[in-house]
Amino acid sequence: GAVVSQHPSRVICKSGTSVKIECRSLDFQATTMFWYRQFPKQSLMLMATSNEGSKATYEQGVEKDKFLINHASLTLSTLTVTSAHPEDSSFYICSALRGAAETQYFGPGTRLLVL
Amino acid sequence: AQKITQTQPGMFVQEKEAVTLDCTYDTSDPSYGLFWYKQPSSGEMIFLIYQGSYDQQNATEGRYSLNFQKARKSANLVISASQLGDSAMYFCAMREGYQKVTFGIGTKLQVIP
Image (cartoon, rainbow over all chains, first blue to last red; front, top):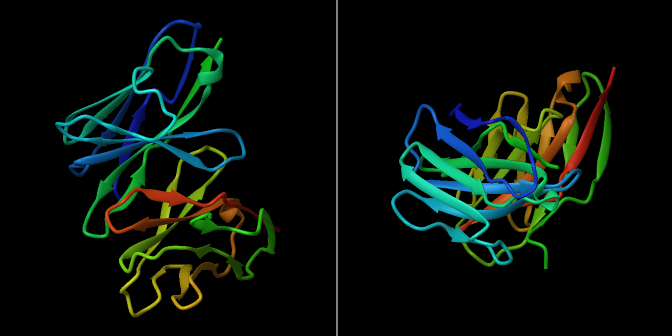
């Protein structure tokens, strides 16, 4: 199957700092990547759709100034949580779209803890 | 209305037995795709199987098969010969046309030795 990496896998930061999470498609090019957030024992909540070379499309209720997304190349998308607060603590997971069936392949996720 | 419904919050299955995880969906788009993903405790989402709305045959991938009943709008996942490593959360998901993918709330499967 396709491989998507995510870095870092875990991050602990102080309130008010910014955190950048990288999502890379390792063996294919992905014009579209997605960023999800998952709270414990809940399903994935789509935050935004990231398209290479254009602005991300954010879901309703997601603050675009707080969750900055950059998709600078066909293999890399980044999510920056700006001025993080404890309520931003969550599991963030990215996915990349591949193939005619447009199957999403997911990264391993990043656990963010904001103190 | 929910687009993806998974009515089984938790399921138990004996090792080596088969298990069916239910999924129903709601869409008026004639072109859609249905997916199943597995999420073990590590958190990663593992793609299992895909069924397109125009596919005539039910999708199969090793021990996984998708029981696609279009008229009933159901896309149940069947896992044959369950293994202990199958214990995980399982999510059903749907893509309508070229739109985003919507996930169900998941089913927690526990395989009993």
